[in-house]
Length: 600
Image (cartoon, rainbow, N blue to C red; front, top):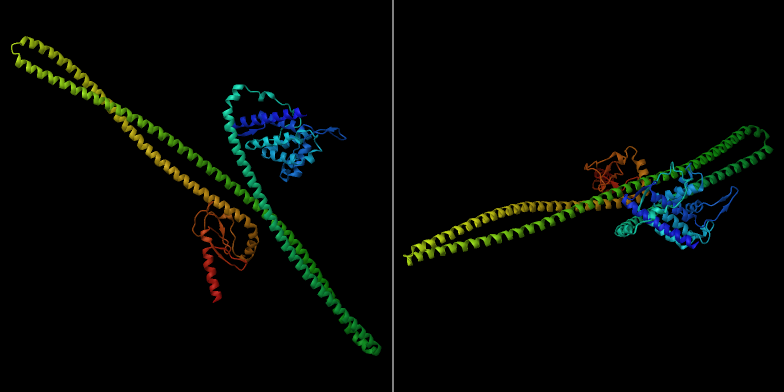
């Protein structure tokens, strides 16, 4: 049993690791035909079947892992939806098929690890289904639950209709988990990155799940407290009404007794009178009959009053049932508002994604600017080298001109000193002419080199002008980047305003149930005023500004129209409200004039 547990735990580690790594390349969204996902369900089925007790019945032996999974519905009320949907699938006929469908739905809800953790925490209930040395009863079960938490980063889109889950054969395919050593070494860096991303996504998912559960529990607690207080008020009112009715019934009984006593006294008086005066009795008999008819009429009226009181009691019971229906409708409204909150949070996430894209664009622009600055510095170095070469060529030209001047001076001296030596001088002159021609050639070559250098310098100047133009473009990019930063700040402000609006909406949602009764009373008091619906108004009636997430809608409790917060920031006490409520500016002035005129 120990070897089987260790082997199953290792297979579960491999299947989860391969599933997460392969899902990252597919965008973390999987379907039912994905092979690593199918193998994961097969390994999970083997882990749940390990150490199951065989239950005997009239039909035969039953060994299914759906039995312990049914306990989740009792331990965790959130899993009731999965159990009902599994039971409502008509194509599932065996317990194994229902268990596989349950695993599919739990993975789609990203709560498979939570449900199995609830099972492992209640091992005294699992002992009815598993042997003491089974995987779910030992420490390996808690390790597997910890591994399953990593699957919350995946989005599984599985369709149960048309799937033959009853007749599938659960065989583990080991070829998916056999890799080369080179592939393992090459994937280590990728695994580190994916592990970091998965941990980040898991923490975000866990925080979101915890915040949602805390909010739901707080809303449920508030709803229960409010309903309890309302029911207590209704009960106290009903008890007061019953006491008043009992008091009226008691008074009617006393009146009945008084009437009966009076009738008895009158009968006694008449008996005495009959003994004394038989003749007067015959005359007064008609009067007694009339008195008897009056008493009979009074009794009929008492019965009629009693019937009316019973009808009033029935009407109060009907009113109580209507109040319960109204409470259910209020709960539906709160659920719809919670859906609206979820949609607003999705819009916030989209705004955050846009901010990230703008930030990446700004980083790319900064990297391009750095590259262009480096190119400008390299071009400046080249221009400095060309200028140094030009200076060296100019120095060579100056030296050659000085040498020519020296040669001419020597010629003149030789002509003056050695007048007779003409031939030798002519020879020297020819040599000097040759030297001059060679020097001229050198000068021409140097001039050509100088022209070439000037052309290169011109080209360098052109490149420098181009680089200056690129610098201007870079400055433009800097300005655009500054604008992008400003847009980013504006978007951040909008996000903060939206978050504040969300917080205000959450506060208003918590107060909405308390204000519903006030709204009903206002509707009764208004009678002639029309209470506009939220969908009928898209802009403020006074300032005519359109409503948005930051500019929210508010009803005036006097006229029933919809205004923004600035146009309806006044509060006054109305006849139908015990405390000051929100009114618009026009109604505020009218009511103040009305109150001032009434007080004067």
